[in-house]
Length: 85
Image 1 (cartoon, rainbow, N blue to C red):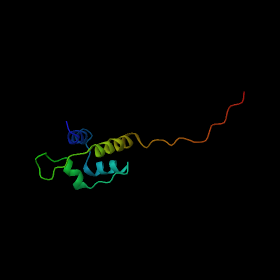
Image 2 (tube, helix red, strand yellow; image 1 turned 180 degrees about the horizontal axis):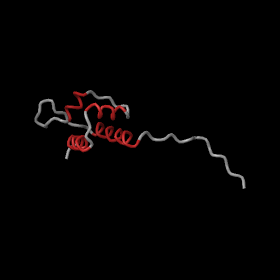
Image 3 (cartoon, rainbow, N blue to C red; image 1 turned 120 degrees about the vertical axis):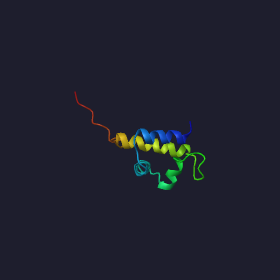
């Protein structure tokens, strides 16, 4: 199974449109156009087919986590005061 297959199956299973996928990728500061994205979803024998690299799939999955769970909460860097007995 290729990265393109995984990407296609996630797109169908989560009922995502191209513009939603682009927004998900933007959550991790990854920019892609609709035509670049559409090339991943074409059949392998199509002249405009492009293989989906590991970086794109990884960024999509990281963005998907943020999209579904929300952004990671910022930890407080101040030490908590100790309780007195």
